[in-house]
Image 1 (tube, rainbow, N blue to C red):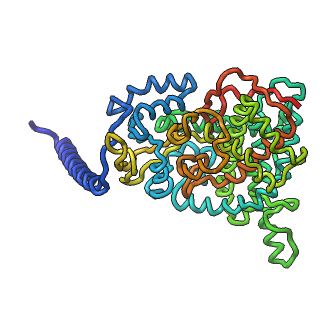
Image 2 (image 1 turned 90 degrees about the vertical axis):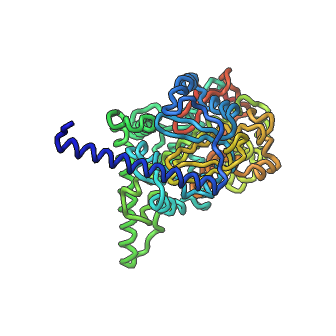
Image 3 (image 1 turned 180 degrees about the vertical axis):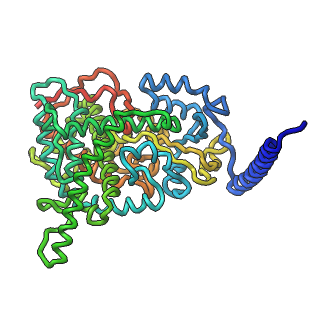
Length: 516
């Protein structure tokens, strides 16, 4: 058959490409076979999918679980059926799911360099830019080094007076006659007030302005919508190229512009301080405002890159607001269902005689600590996480029919770990693993035994940098509420139901009655 020269060129090119691809596949197969043999790997025996190409057979059940607000419970049931490590396929992505503490330790610590968070970058970038929350490698390491000093112990202690001021704002909104109130909604206002005060040196005081229309309230609403849009972008993946949410774009701009004013102020204050020092004038300590060091000023003293400061502030604001608010909402939901626990908390704080606790006194309240630990166990604020393998690597468990052999992880595979399901394993936490029982933490044995089996703040090099601040804030709010109210009554007759956002909350809020 007589083809034009251009067609012959295309045919030859296609043949060469196919041949090279075939050679590459054969070579990769041999390399991986040798790799798995060297590490003693066996195939992961259980798979959630019967469709090996797109995994569409599992899609209907996944959608039904989401609609019924029980996707986390459904995943926990899957681990019961398929074992502690199994495979899944979501459209074009291969995935390994695990609740083995040793696997999670390997992902987050031992083989930390084998995994990446790059899948996070694009969904979060319009709101957060490129900061500690969604970058890897040198950029992430520089972000962590930039931020870490601002979460030193003395900074947390210094912020207790600010927490007390905000507690008074919260108490002013709580009904004193036992009427039903949604604490979860108020906790989200409280934590954005706290986070902005800590980061910018000026709280936006949404609790004080709850009933008024102003710029601060508009920022809080825009920030909430922008976070929901992050989830949508994450689910759409490549489809974001044809999808556009103009409201999300407006909210992202509004949030970043609002925070940018504090960046400009911090950089200007730092530069002015440096000019005064160079001129021999006496100055107050860099990064301070009215005697208190301010997070944004601390960052400005370490870098003059305004966009970098802005990105890091947005990231810490996101984490600081959502994680603590979710923790408090979930905690008070369970406390309202357990009046005996509330009474026990009341007895523990009696010695304070209704005065605000010091940092040392707060740390001495062991049952308060147990209640917070138990809330983070039963309802971890980040219930599931995942990493993408950047090279061929190995998990220590999951291979073979019994799951006790090493398992091969090909490059590009997503490895997801369910903290929610792991925290409810009866072999780790006992037959009452689904119950809220703070006493399980009282003698300290459980946490020493579990190590990587209890993971409320992640682990390894990426362990939550602000966990001390979050735990201090949650403890402080709990103590002051216990001091203020004799009884906490649940006004939600149903069980706790999940609401998945960037963090895990109660779907129906935290409806309670507060008795003075």
